[in-house]
Length: 358
Image (cartoon, rainbow, N blue to C red):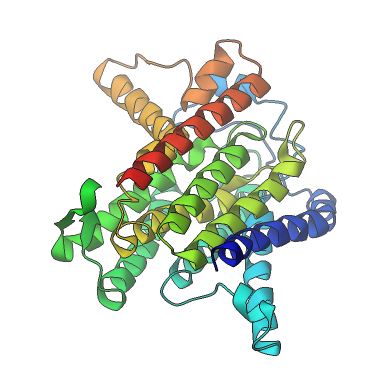
């Protein structure tokens, strides 16, 4: 049985990878034919001021390279999970039925957050592409995106609280903290925090490698907890992310953009809670370790904003998030990316060890 569980976890990853590889060339052709990229390079900071260092570093990258590459990730994942479910229904009692990992208690909510986040991200990307015109700023305002994430977080938290009867936070050693009704706002805040790390999507290959590593780590945690369907789901996302990464390594054929980062980040938060009390573990507490690159990305932005407000505009980093700081210091983008990958792998393994020891 253990052997087949391993097969069940890795087959969806392989299937999702090849589905992504198969349809991406046609999708890429569609993006280029329709000029699905920003009309002007650059961005504005959270305080709505210009970011001259970032804009000078990326002035030749964002124009002419399509957005919406994240569609590859959630679409190939959705096709994979639905295809295996349909085949299981068509061939009951066969190996296909055993490979089906769509389940109410483990994968419904993560699948919902992945697709919902991806679709909202598509709207943001389309507004960024079509609505920015000659302006740098475009897409949905940050306040609206945060509102959408909070809404999805509340819906997911309500499902955990009322349907799955989860209201505790796991602790090392098998303990738990009872949050009661406060579980709902806590869940939502964690989702918002992880979503903020999505700004790591700023250098070719960076976000894809980080997210693939993080979801593989949680596949291992879920497998250790014998949540096999959830482990298969996480491995599937890693596989589809690798198919995206195949086309996103320098020079990137497209960018992940909001349709990828929103879906992946809010799904990651959901998976962390799935591997918490439900799995008799503490998947939320190890999240900052397993997802250290996202944690550092968020912290660097917060530190930069606070410093500019309290120190009369003085900055801690040359450019935030932190990966752009290293670019501004003269590191080649590929060196930043590969070192983030290395740090991500090391701390994902470290986080898995902590989860296993619990």
